[in-house]
Image (cartoon, rainbow, N blue to C red; front, top):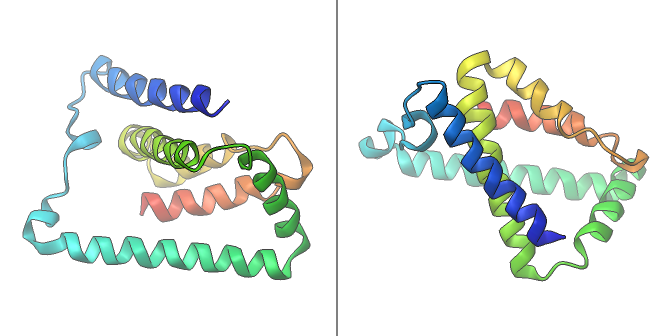
Length: 148
């Protein structure tokens, strides 16, 4: 299952690049490093990324300790990921992040803006189980964070 999902994300990333080319757009927004990184902004962006990541993880851990809905969702996701080898879980996380960032931030947000892209991101995270109902709301919020 993990390998199929990884292949799906690889195909999604390739499809995003091909769509960008088919639309006659430059690949730069998808793959170019920000100019501010060459001006010393890389360390600021890395620090901000780490701070956001740590804040999200700590907030989610707190929610799992104190909120039933978060406990149910956490148990559901743990059950889904449990059969994966650590390397497969890492590959799946890395490829989903790459494919989603290319599509949502690189291609979609550049065309329709932050708010619609974040909402579409949430819609595409609609759950198939009741325990994951908060997931699309969290995806919209993270769409704003990543898009910002």
